[in-house]
Length: 440
Image 1 (cartoon, helix red, strand yellow):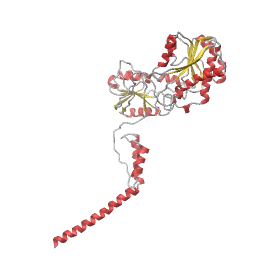
Image 2: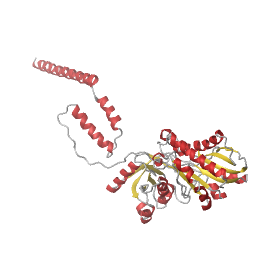
Image 3: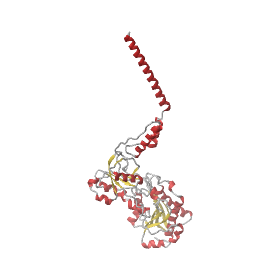
Image 4: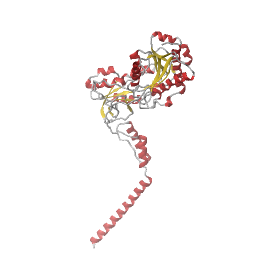
């Protein structure tokens, strides 16, 4: 009887315990299912903080999110416990450079070494560079009044940097964008490999990211991961220059060419670089027709293809001129954006320049005054190089151009309609002057 009673009493205790647990399980389930905040907390963490790699700024932001979430949930004690973690990769926007090889989609992990110039690179031993990613931290100089001059000074790091660092054993190159913009929009653009040197991937980062990267390099060891699938597609596809002309009334065999390039990089819309030049060149001929101007020389508008990463259109145009034995008296390019016009650069003889400057007063009412700079344009450079054709280029106001150049920012909305039209005015006036006065 005692044994039976003991078993029975134990069963009563066990049954009461199961019942209480069951009730609490139900309460827990109901509270979470009906009033839980975990789902909304997860949404906040994912959407306002994002990925949170250990050691990154996002991870620090996540710490603050966690403390706030706990405090809001009513925790009686919330604290932060120090813990040292390795500095891992910091994700940032970058653009591969035109003609650069990629990493084949694979991660390229290596230590970063900051270098300020080609001269500094030369002072470093191969052992110092070998197996690392070089970060060329060369800023466009702000003391150049013309942004195009600053661009010309800095662009060599984009153009020739990859082969220079690869020659010392580097496995990749990151450059500070060739940009005046106080933003973090990376700029692309063409680069060139030396065939005898190993080809390594090259990317550009925006100015703000470059500043952060430079700071980290000064603080200690930095590693980077480069990963891209870019590359040049093998083979070629047929494309075209687009050409329109008005035949000369007196000298149809003497040609003045005005043009811009129709291609653009695969970021933005190619509005400033160089849709502007294309529509301005078309506008010159449209204006002549609308006003009934019969030019003495043949005037051509040319929309060149492949300026950005090959110059195939400019070369083809020149080769065609040679094959047809054409006489080009002047070639003009407009490839400096849609800023207000300030002058015309020229690669002409001193005597021809002086002839044009005599008429400078005609341009002054339009705030166009500078006819002293040397220069023409990339697409018309083959005509200069192979045939000795005098060249000229429209000179727009340059201060904002490299905020847009080769970035996602290069969109139609950045173009001011009055400044665009004034550029076309200057081109049409310049061509009219050269044509009517038979300067060339």
